[in-house]
Image 1 (spheres, helix red, strand yellow):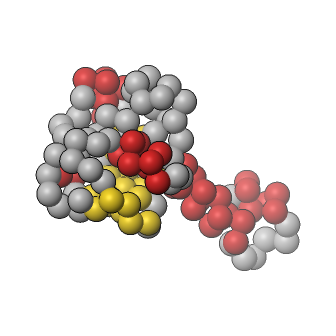
Image 2 (cartoon, rainbow, N blue to C red):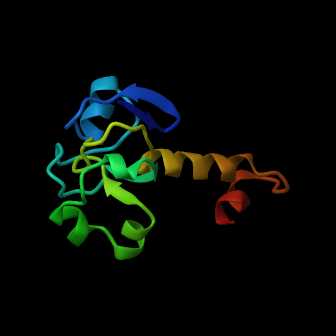
Length: 118
């Protein structure tokens, strides 16, 4: 099965979590609690293919804000591949990197400081 994590294709094994696939490939995804669902640093946005993942776990349902859950956010250490289709995911760290890049590359400000305040 294919996982597209932060724009890069990764082969994902049936039953494997998003975090396990990312770690195996050395992909850009934070984790602190080694996949126990406690730290939530592996939070990611499932852009498409959520139907190919396991149902949200109790840790996800209680730990992630309801608005994030409704937008398709999951914990990479909890979401397991169960279907046959592709899954497209953007990790929290990648989302933050993209936002920072947008701030830094924005034109119209004379220095970096004013761009950050925006």
